[in-house]
Every structure is written in structure tokens, then in C-alpha cells.
Length: 129
Image (tube, rainbow, N blue to C red; front, side, top):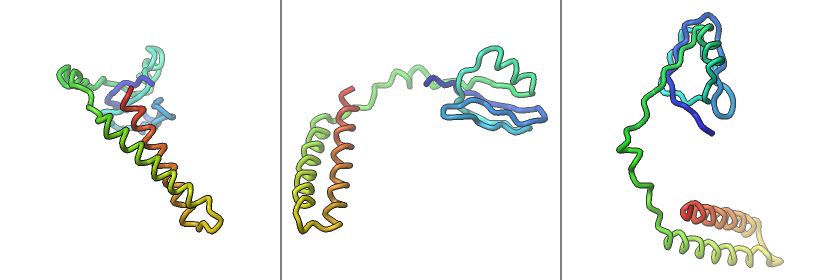
């Protein structure tokens, strides 16, 4: 979801709710908030906030040089090896947990192995994007 980074100053007499990702941010009278990410406002909403004493000042973004920096490099072979290791660990934990004399610790180890396998799959998938 697109957001904008602003500084918020409130000179009005009543608190207002500013839309942010996931809900709202309450801005109290005489508040000055620096570098807040809010949802974009229409001209009408901005005018409404202005009538209540709230002003929004855009914060300058990072420099073009920083934006042009290369994305972080992922070590795909290492992530593939981690996935293979997670599969081996899962298989071993599954075999232990399936035995008739399996303990609670064996079942807990299986849950952890499943989580590790899912994390390894997610990491590899994200790196390939």
C-alpha cells in the first residue's frame, strides 16, 4: 500500500485521527510528529484537517544515489542447501514422531522442523523474485 512520509503539526483544540496503514494515528493538540508514514490524502481531506489546525509537511525522500543502490544480493546456492538440510531434518523428525513410542519432545521437534522447512522455502522463494 502506498504511503507518504510527512511531518505533522497540530495547532487545533481537539485530537484528530490520521489514516495510516492498518488503522489511524491519533494526533493530539500541540503535537509535532516528525517523519510519519500516512496514507495519501485527497485535497478535500487535507483541507478538512487544515481547518482543524493540522498541517502536513512532506519529508524529503532519500537521495537518488541511495535509491539507485543495488538490491541486496542473495546467495541462492546457500538458500537451496538450507532448504535441502531442512527437508532432511523434517524427514528425521517425522520418522521419530510417527513411532508408537514417540514422546512429546519428538512431536515438538517435528513442529520446529516444519517451521524451519517453511521458513527455508519462503526465503528461497523471496530470493528468486
